[in-house]
Image 1 (cartoon, one colour):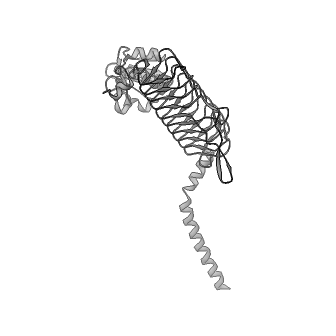
Image 2 (cartoon, one colour):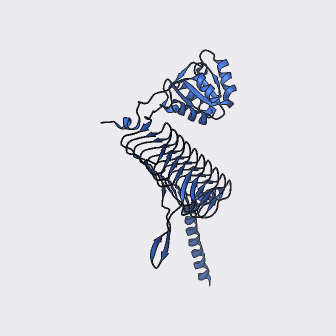
Image 3 (cartoon, rainbow, N blue to C red):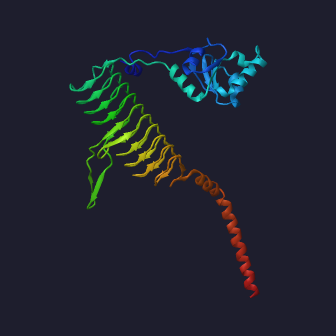
Length: 375
């Protein structure tokens, strides 16, 4: 019986390694120390080991980085002079002199790129598994992987190098771009369009009916959902995400947008490029989201609102009206972040204010009694 791993991959995971010099060259970065130091993995500063590389973003963690077991550290270019001075002060005994440093403008981004370089390579077996069902009029590109139990419908188009892991369902007329990856149990309803290099994680459903009904005489009559969903290039969609097809036209997710797990996107929503939607965000029908918007966890948007370019919606924000470009809003209903923080600060004083009010009420009552006694 095949193991879970062999069902996903035809070969075992292949570990990778790079020297510090190679990493610096690939990152277009400077380095200090021995360029031949071999790096086989990544780690946070609290979990380093020989052979790993970690990162820091400022001098506050420099001492911890130098005393760690990591074989190399990624640090900001702004620290170059500090590190060079440290080497001069202690050329033999200094930790800097022994530990290679890779210097870059954005250490966090560089670390992410190194993680990608070093992660084990999985090699799914190209071709169609014997248990997959492919309709005869479907187009399967070059170098495609279709694993156990998949279904590909009539007139579907699977681009070159695409990967369908076990039990993926591709409906009639679906278009999947080159090098896209669909993880187990993804469902693409009919005539959905998926761009190039898109990654869709397990359990996500793209193209199910939008929630559209007309009420009459106490009954809810379904409105046919005849539109589609368009996912543009380089989008990543987390696990158990649902994106509804448009009533008419298309629900659209723009190029480079990243969507976390458990997000709901309703019919006819338009999402721009390079947006971030964190877990449990919910967008009602016909919402328009411009480019570079960030939505923190559990933000909820009512129908037909517009979110301007570069806006930030805080966690659990309740969006009941349009949000302008670059605005940062929080709360439910959402208000500008500064206003929200002032309100929150004031609310912490409410218990003491209530006690003061009760004391004042008692003082007023006492004064009233004294005045009545004089009368």
